[in-house]
Image (cartoon, rainbow, N blue to C red):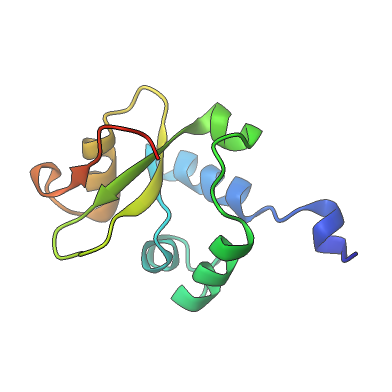
Length: 114
């Protein structure tokens, strides 16, 4: 067992702390967005993708349950749906649009949580 397995990977907690510091109410979990928003945590989209495979977003994890809810969204020009963590009580569409730098009406959000 490695030290990282024993101690746990703190990148999700660090990412949520960055959300707090930046006033973001959403954290897009698409690899490209993680890399764009938090390059110190994920230097490349491939690194973010590998991290997501090893650490899939699980709504039962306490840090996720406490911070927000998982939502499925699709910004303009993207053909696949992606997941995001949205702070409790926030308007998912508006919060994601702000972080993505897109107009709110252009961001699609599924009504049901994943």
